[in-house]
Image (cartoon, rainbow, N blue to C red; front, side, top):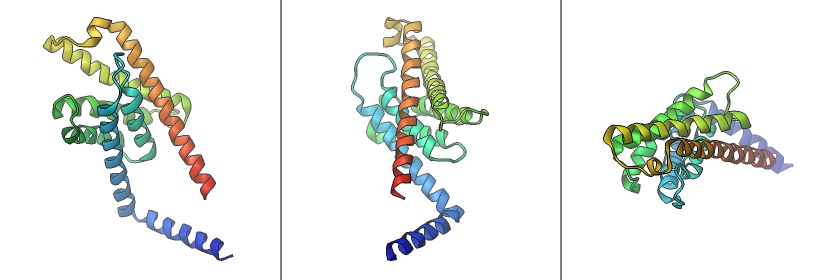
Length: 193
């Protein structure tokens, strides 16, 4: 009986805390920081398999998972910009400004996609479409930079269309994996409570 009361009082306390806007903002900012760091670490530590866009399975999955968890305006953009900031001490391969463009644009497109009616990161189709869109934004910046600066990139050797297809496939896969992670986490939390 006492465990039922303590659960009920814990639930009431948690609801009261969550009702405070400052607490919600602080928790969301903490989550954005954590998911930004996780995204940067995942990008930095991914195993190189020589396939263009394959790192998205790691970094984009973390970004989409973070955007799914943090229900806040511009959370994707903040995670993307945070990824660029964490990229400085972690050592991502590009400059800070370039990383802001790469990951910030991906996060911003995640935010924009979630504003479209019937597109949600909470359903399988929406997660796949969001992953595709976010990763193609990053690919677009890479293509633009390569064409504008005439820097030889691996995707030029592989081919634009083939590389775009790889980016699309890995973006979709990242969205689906993130959807599965969030869904499994929510089911686990629901069972615990």
